[in-house]
Amino acid sequence: MKRLMAVAMAVAVLGFVSVAAAADATGTWKWTSTFNNQTREATLKLKQEGDKLSGAYVGGQSNTETPITDAKIEGDKLSFKVTRERDGQKFTTAYSGTLKEDTITGTQERERDGQKNSSEWVAKRQK
Image (cartoon, rainbow, N blue to C red; front, side, top):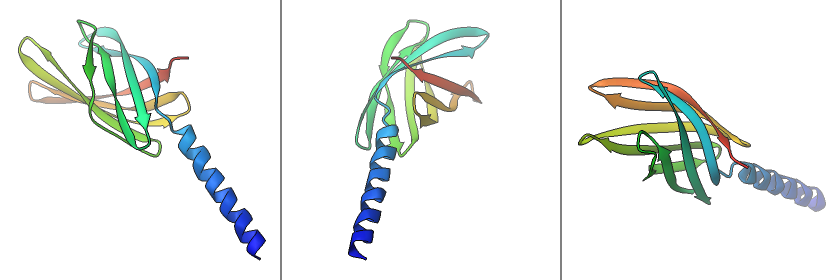
């Protein structure tokens, strides 16, 4: 009976470790976004250390690197914000998504001129 419990515990631990390893967001991610009839490529550089997530977004008109804020990862769910400035105005886009292997699928939401806008985004990890 003790042996059976030990085997069950080992299987549970291995299952947990493999799920945690599969949900590692570290890497460089790319996708395209269309806004105001303009399509742009975006790059996201993420670093995950346990349940801590940090990184930078590279994109926009000037293709500058902007640190992400409010970054969170829990299991396979992640979220972060990117605040950029143009013509003296700040614009924040909130990203949320689900990580599965080398793909993040989610929603990006932003507000501009009092109007909220959301769209889907699908990012692929670069090899």
